[in-house]
Image (cartoon, rainbow, N blue to C red; front, side):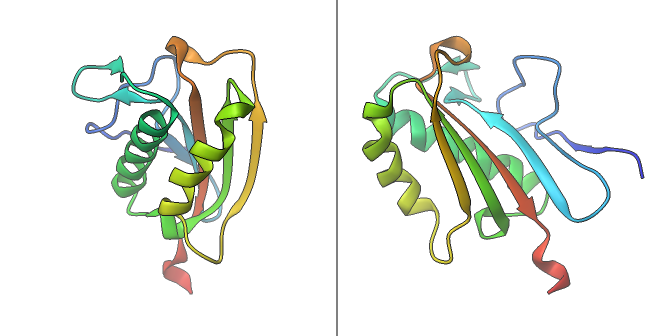
Length: 131
């Protein structure tokens, strides 16, 4: 089965040669990392880590919806922060998005992110329709 991709016209355009999301054999959807880009302006939003994390989750929600998925379908989350001092604030926003049972998660600090973002988040979602 060839790779299938998702393009969401409501989400920010990718800043490189990649798709918003892709899937292959099986039911997993791999959503590319989203940064706090405002889809209306295609520019990084102003504000601190709370505002940036909220924008990232809005972008992720849009891509998931374009693939007929939601945060309830997410099984794995990877969070990239440029400063681990932002962890508690990011985690507070994260806790408003996900409920128990929580998806698996990894959070790492990185040296930098595209366009000067403070946070980037990628998710893997399963299709729960078969349950």
